[in-house]
Image 1 (cartoon, rainbow, N blue to C red):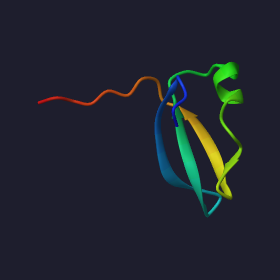
Image 2 (cartoon, one colour):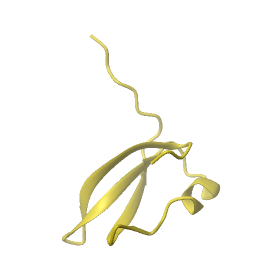
Image 3 (spheres, rainbow, N blue to C red):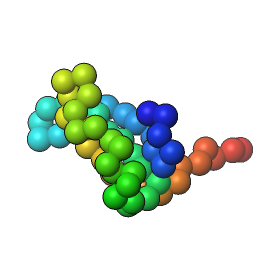
Length: 57
């Protein structure tokens, strides 16, 4: 999702059914309002993770 504050998207399971997981940088209500509750017929579940950075070796 090309929304500022969304740091990742994946496929997960919500109550035993497939869902879309959206990982957020912060707990902002403004950010949460931009995330749809469903997408392509799948429930969308948000989780605040903070920033995600790749580990470089």
